[in-house]
Amino acid sequence: MFLLIGNINAQYCSATASSSNYEWIKSVRVSTSNNYSGSSSGYQDFTSNTPMNLITGECHNFEVQAAYSGTEYPEYFGIWIDLNNDDDFFDAGENIFLSSTSIVGGVGSNIVIPSTATLGQTRMRVIMNYNSNLMPCGSFAYGEVEDYTVNILSSDPFCNSSGNSTAFEYIESVSINNVHEFSGDNGGYNINLCAPFYLNMGMSNSVELTPGYYGSSEYPEGWTIWIDYNKNNSFENNELVHKNHTSYGTQTFNLYVRPEAIPGEIYRMRISMQYSNYQLNPCANFSYGEVEDYIFVALDPLGVANLSEDNFSTRDHSADEEISNITKISISPNPASDFIQINTFNNSAIPKTYRIINGSGQLMEASSQNRSGHNSRIDILDYPNGYYILQIKTMDTWESIPFVVSH
Ligand SMILES: [Ca+2]
Ligand SMILES: [Ca+2]
Ligand SMILES: [Ca+2]
Ligand SMILES: [Ca+2]
Image (cartoon, rainbow, N blue to C red; front, side, top):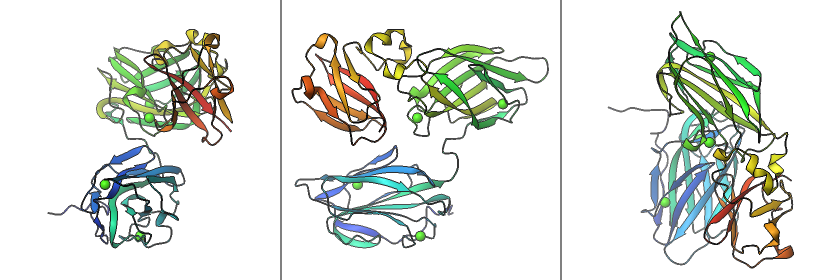
């Protein structure tokens, strides 16, 4: 029996390298989806992996990395996506990236999927070729070919989650800092991306979650909240910001915005209410209860994004776990545009080993040079706008100091 789901089992032209012994594709990353692989006999089929999501009109960063068995050779790279889902890579715009010169190590760039692309799952082909005649089909001498399934979306990229029944209970309203959203019974899921809440950094934000019940009986409900702080369109375990075990009636508590939030940015928030116990899976469909998605804007009325080291003690330490020993080292200016200056308490010596990691966890640069005085400046002029972490090696630990680049 054959099950054809979309076009993922379609017959595409074959492509392969004759040898992947000297160089091969080590990783393919699209946004935050990363696939690592080794060498092969010239072709690797990853089409049954979880599809990489691509949203039309949005900017997706990608990266292809090479690995070598010995000498590092310069390579050409090409990426094709069957945008109109007709089993070939030859339609207009389907060659979404092509190297103009050969390069050692890998390539990265941005992809924008046009809104005319056919929605749903389709094929992406990534080719690394030692020689320059890059084609989506056929065989060539040295390099590797990898095939993927991508999922072209035009709408909400977040996973589905809902209660299967609101016959007994549902989320009636959500209030944050006196902004009230009454939703009533939405049949298990409600999304409201048009009316943001406003949460203040460095301050407590009062949250009120109210269940609705049919009839006179009240049931115990478990509540969970996730915030997509890293803006990768999914809710990771460390983005669970609140859970509340089986409670009756309205829940009132304070929520703190994590220090990695960027003032003025919009964040996605998922609120889940499940009968009897909180739901720890942000993508679950469960029996009784409701899920609601909202957005909020991070505000910074106290200027905590520019806080000097002394003020951190007033902040929510439960959210600051990763920022240890912040009192020893600081960065100015923050946000920064051209450079960051490393400052130390009492002008003590600046540790010489540092690295900078971007909001997706990727290494931007690292250095072990001696630095003091003016050399304590790090040039960040070519950094994209966003959130970064400077990590400095002190005696035996890495200290992490967040900063924002805004040009
Ligand atoms: Ca490979
Ligand atoms: Ca096509
Ligand atoms: Ca509701
Ligand atoms: Ca996330």
